[in-house]
Length: 396
Image (cartoon, rainbow, N blue to C red):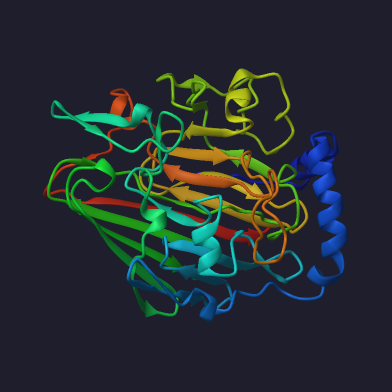
């Protein structure tokens, strides 16, 4: 299993480059964030929200907040509304517990947010399906188009907007179940889904996805956690150092649908094969960056089998390192380009432009319409099963 090593010289070079990669809006955000945060954030560890603010009723089902904690003190707060990671507390370089997942302090805030996907479990099909249509065995299915002319993350009411049945068998594990009925959002088949979120002994957040169907259908499940490894509300993520184990990526058209090609990252702003600050090349004159308003692309992970190392990110201020492992062939890197400062996070800060990023383990976007991509078709009698792990440590 390949592991990326962030040596001190490499990190020093990356952090030195940071000052040149911020745009004006990031600098303004940093200034206001740091001045407001300095005194309080250094004195106390992050706290999880109050459970009672998640105990409600949506669509006739009870919502709640479930707390997972391992022996090291790593803590996760998850609500069954949308299967969302609300908080994820891990120690920084000084041992202070830091909330590395942005989110809200109540279930009502999630239900009313202008951004639908903060921390959510995504399905039936994560990412985009071109023109909201796909065909299985000669039959065309039409979906709700909620992203321009395309379908995004399952349609109008994807898995992020449903209440899951939750069971907590022990202190470190939460099981979520949901039956997506035949033709829900236009997808065929009754799909029985089980998602297990757990904390490992070595500070990993483990995501296990399972599904079965009674008709041929398409499935591509993931989690849409928005990360800031310096802590929620700490400002821009453009200074985070990122490495992705991918020599190729999927270029897209103007609606962010893959062209079908697998293009080399070498010589482009998409080359994260070596550690680089996220924002170092984000303002380059590159058509793909213009289409995504920054990074919002699938990276084709280098070949391997089983659970393999996909990416590493390091918070420039906190020293928190996140290593991503997955059985999936792709990784969607989204740099928070559509965050607009319209919602208020748990810590009281707004969801400002590029103050969080996502690394979504997945099959490729628009896979049902791209025969050359790995298939996401699930047939009756088969079980969809995939695992991803987000492992946290400290890079001092």
